[in-house]
Image (cartoon, rainbow, N blue to C red):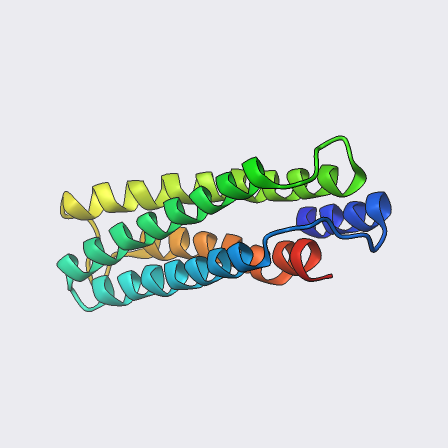
Amino acid sequence: MLFLAMAAARFYLAGTTKGEVNIGLGLVMTAILLVSSWLAYGAVRAISHGNRRGFVLRIALAILMGLLFLSGVAIEWTTAPFSVSEPYGTAFYAMTGLHVFHMLQGLLGLVLLLWLGIRGHFGPGDHWGATATVRYWTFVDVMWLVIVFPVLYLL
């Protein structure tokens, strides 16, 4: 609901006016998030079959993808040809900032999973914490894919 409220605020503030966003960068960032979710779900599948090495590797790669995504946001924030004082800029920085906040929470969760996985936690019958964390991570990715990216980059 919060992301939908932000989308509504974007259209209230800027109407259908769109800033000059880097659509290529936005598409790359979207692909990075999709790969990160695929890796994270692969990690849960791996640990559910007792493959701790696969779990740790996939979680580490999902973290790397999350960091790459945040790097893309940093590039977009520093090179955008609009400012926060413009209606579209206000909406852009608010929506992407909200998404980054949730991404940071998800990354902290994935780092915790990595640390616990390395220490031998989780196994085929005990991985609910990993599953819940990965579901949150994927939820944040879906918010980008379904709301943030279309509303800021496409519409």
